[in-house]
Length: 289
Image: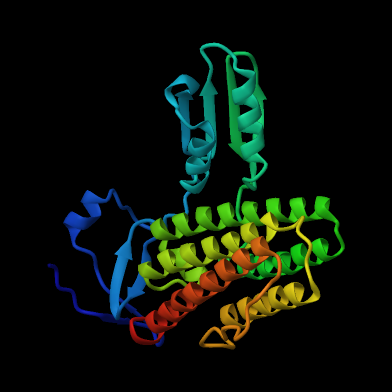
């Protein structure tokens, strides 16, 4: 451990000197930029803000991958910006699988394609969106999904479900980057690493609720069924906006339609679990920041 005295510079600033061996070891020179971060009342000095352009690339033979779709999703979450999929023999079925999966991954597009390879690139230079904005958008889409079912506009229902899936994967990509990037974490108001896990779980639960609603889109809903779902979506908004500490469980949760009843119970269970995630984040911010 090194010790340095703080020196006064002018009327508003203070400075410390760096040990020479640190400067040499980190290849620092005059006018280089250092980054200071306060974590749990301790100051961390970094030579990088981890915001350098991520040009990560990977080339892989399709025959070596058991699940191409899962592999592409993993690359997306891991912030791989360029994927080159190489074919020993072009496979039309695999191509269809690739196309079907990237439509759920915001920013991924096929940028080059021939008989020997498919290249996928992330086309957004920066993601100017934070996790709270994604949560608000997903909540709005849930309401729009239910409205489309009420109007029997099932084409819109499918498009909305796809949008929710896309936002879910985008949230995972952002949160994965937050785990490596302290500046991005601060921008998303994440001050504890554990919060990343809780947010991941919350996004997964919202996406799960959308799945449950989507699977019963063709059922015969009663007025009471829609009322119960409306109440559930209102609870999500209250929980995630911090206006409610506990989930108000329905006293009577009954549908004459067996499948709708089954999904209502599952949605209610998801909401109960979501309460714990939200409260854990609040506790972390209150006592451990």
